[in-house]
Length: 135
Image (cartoon, rainbow, N blue to C red; front, side, top):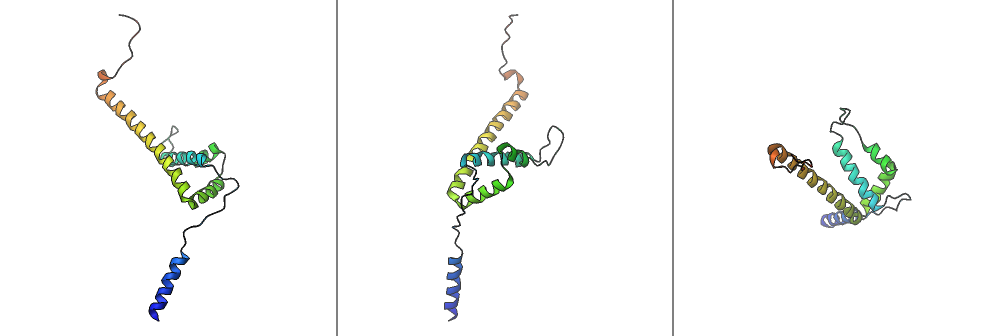
């Protein structure tokens, strides 16, 4: 009897833990393209919040600027985010696109930093523009 009760409890636990929750599509759902751009900018805003800006301020919250840029508020973002997280395949596509864009940005910044380091170490090896006036 005890084994039957244990089996029944385990079976109830598995059946009760259905992870397929689908939320209704909100009226003001942010499109996948805009959500990709929004999440990209959010990652940049979060990443730069601890960097000192031109006014020598640190720990600044730039999220309000991101919401303003896209003409949305935090509630609209939250509702769209909940909807997309319930549709994991769409959310995965969005995050892969964001990740790819962030990787491209990182690679370009690394290349730029490398070229600056090379120019600093060996300034005579850097291609300088030719002077148009003959000497």
